Amino acid sequence: MNKRIIALLITLAIVPFGFVACGEKKEKAFMSGVVYEESTKTPLSGATVYLNDARLDTGADAQFTFSELEPGATYKLKVTKEYFEPFEEDIVAVYPTTTKEVNLKLKKVAEGFASPIKEVSIAKLKSYDFDIAFGSDSKDVALTMTGSFVAPGSYSFEMKSKERSNTPEINNGKPEEPQERVKKAVQIGNKQWIDDGSGYKPSNEWFPGFNDIFSIINLDVSRLTKSFSAPQAFVDNGLVQIGDKQCRQLRGVSVIEEQLDSKSNKTQKLFVEFNVAIIESGELAGVPVQAELITYQSAREVKTWSKTTLSNFNIPSEIKPPIK
Image: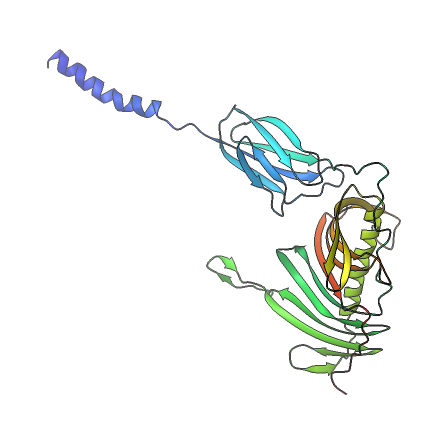
């Protein structure tokens, strides 16, 4: 065979292999992490995370992930969130993945700061309507309660809760959505009536629903009072009109201590983020109209969200039994 033809065939044979080798895709790296509040290790949702020009916001799990990174390359990691000192650090991407725990420090309020609200209380209320939502966050509300209270011991309410069956069905790879369960109750003195969907009946067993409501309201009020006494960050948005009341709108975060349980003297740190509207002056000064709290219990590692709205304060009213 002609030497030129042999050389051409050899060249054609090895070129494709050389092309594949040169064009071989280089493996990319990942970077992931979690954003915490430094002192309580609270997972922080709503933190903005930058990696060079890429940006994302943390969700309820406080996690972030970036992909398609060049192994060995250096990236600028920045994390910001309201009330917190910004975080910044150079990170070298390592194949296959790099993990980073980011701990944010709370900004401090100015020395000598005094909250415009000294104490929060609902003890001045003889009657009020309430609307409460409770869950892991504002997008996952597990329980809602609405109703009215008239001192000293009369109240009506409707409670809605989301419940799944013990053996949920799987449809197209997804578990069934929780069903909404509605329960209504009326209590006058020591008598109570319950409606599970088939009409009101005298209650044979004491239903503790309103006690739960009252506990939630008072627990939030107690945590607000503690937060106002020594806030880590505080924003006073001034006066707002809610209904016929002039209220002061306050936002901020605080780290407070609370007894772990009634059986021990142990305490735990709580991270509290609040957004509240409190009556500014007059007979009902200090009464919360709206209170939204995010609370993280460090010992139990539990994060909860609650929102309470109170209205129609001290309007003369009567709650009547649904059946005789």
